[in-house]
Image 1 (cartoon, helix red, strand yellow):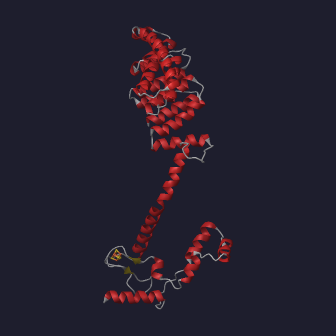
Image 2 (cartoon, helix red, strand yellow; image 1 turned 60 degrees about the horizontal axis):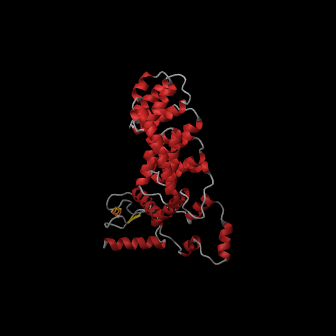
Image 3 (cartoon, rainbow, N blue to C red; image 1 turned 30 degrees about the horizontal axis):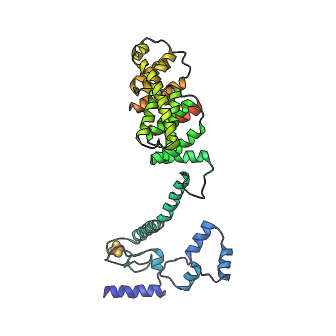
Length: 351
Ligand code: SF4
């Protein structure tokens, strides 16, 4: 009976036969659109001329709309309702069965409608996000990003949240292509190895060659053997890889001979250059703690020529030795702006 009475009142409301005392603006959407997008009377005129219905035509065609519905105070959240509440100032109750007031019902409905509406369109946002990601990776035919600086910045931002090997690969590849400095190249390739983006035959060969030339033949041999063990070389690449490995092995044997007296030589030396060379030797052999100690001595001794590279070697050695905070301090000691850029990538990795 109660329910029937409620339907009757609701019906009267719909018909506009009951004076409810609320001033509900007609056609509120038009104001919203005009405020948001400016005047669009030209488009409306064109739609009319072409016989295309707009939301305003359909709105007008419906005649008197339910004022309760327009205010969002008809609640269907649970099965005690629907609670079709009274308009402000009317005699009809303005509290639902559960005790929710018109303010609660209106705000709750708005929040739920917005959540449902956003969810319904989340697939569009997802498609756009995926397309942008593919474009950033160069995997979206027809889309090209010309802003290199912007791309780098975006990839770095992406790395903060999704540090995947693919994202690192894309970022480091840009830096590696740009650099023609051996020390930068070595630091970038080492980072590439540590983040898991060293995968291509070309990368293994280039890295190993840079290491051998730079005085890290034992490391160069390790890198080539690692690449070989993955069975990624074939044809021309295989020939180059074998040649690079053979050359690395020869030079690595020479380095190994020096390792025997390295501890005593480091303890005795008063030359920053000698300490630096011994630090490189330890690094090449994967003795990162010893390499860090030698680099510290090299930096502390006056007369060292390439102080920046000593800081870079120290930072990477400490990073590989699990001493993140000390590594970051070492990277901060690099003064050359371009080399400091590479150090910044290492710090990004250590965050
Ligand atoms: S106002 Fe309360 S009782 Fe009524 S339908 Fe909504 S949640 Fe249920």
